[in-house]
Image 1 (cartoon, one colour):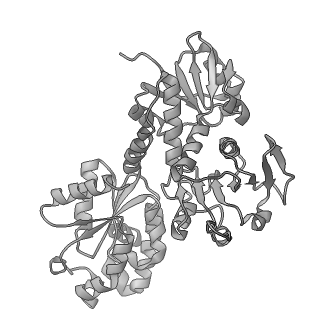
Image 2: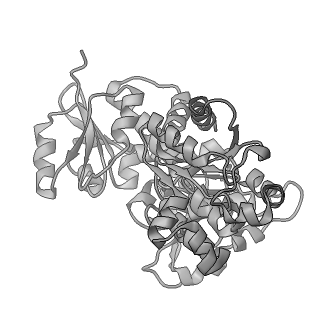
Image 3: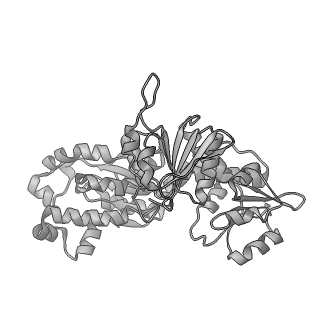
Length: 439
């Protein structure tokens, strides 16, 4: 039996994915240890653990409470992993360093000699700067909302120039090679939002043989939602990008190795990211009116033990009248406005099942609220099987015309396609399998 004790120390902890990640890694039992500031020093003094992770707001304080620390932890100035050694002494590490290094490596981004624009100057930025310096960045511009203009550059290790600028100097950083987002901007529930517009960065490409066009990478340490505002813009612009879930799992993997004195294959990171992505993301069903989205979605939700949201029913509930009444009194524009308002709120959810209205794809502004945290499944059904009762547009335009108008939109929005053929339970299982298989 494993009698070793691991956990996460912080305050307030609320919901954390760390216990689930460490369960998948095998470093259990792993507890959430929510303690007040005046309890931190006595907690470390008791040493009643084998290894703990440390999170906000105690990472800096933890460095002064351990008996020794790694070079990376000392350079960064904070500790997020503490291990009790065989002699009872405590040794501190910073595995956020390992996590961000993995994020860069996962994209194959070569930043040697490059310029990085880093948004944010808080605790999460410390490990980012250390990794960028160690990977050979020539210049790092840190954008801090509390700063004005251009701060004086500092040299680190004689090679990397680091300077802190205010957002008013942003225009002078558009030639940067990569952008790193370390602020809470775009984090749930204030999503989708972005700390900056990537268009000017992307437009500042290099010239000459072998040159890259604009940004080589965009990285965001936020992991909820899965696709933050800045990452969705990077996707639209065709810029390689990565979110914070890989960093979260990679730092946990490094901590688990330290806790147990073992080496784990890096393939474990991808496996766990894939598993967590399925757990965290919602499943959103799109398709023609009458294609079975609500019926199949309800069964998918039951099978997975997830909350279910029927967007049409949500609009009806909020409006206090039927869809037919909304169309009659407010027209299609009125209905679409209500639908979008509901989708902005519902799209922020994690781990839900969402049945969208058939026309959700007709408004481009609906895509990002849905895409930010959902696997979008296009549910297909033969046109001659689609009912029209209670569906104003299916009745007025006809199913064939409606399908012709929307086909390219369903195809563009869907991450995967499932045919609604056979019994409903089989179709629901096919939806779940399709989302599990997405990479």
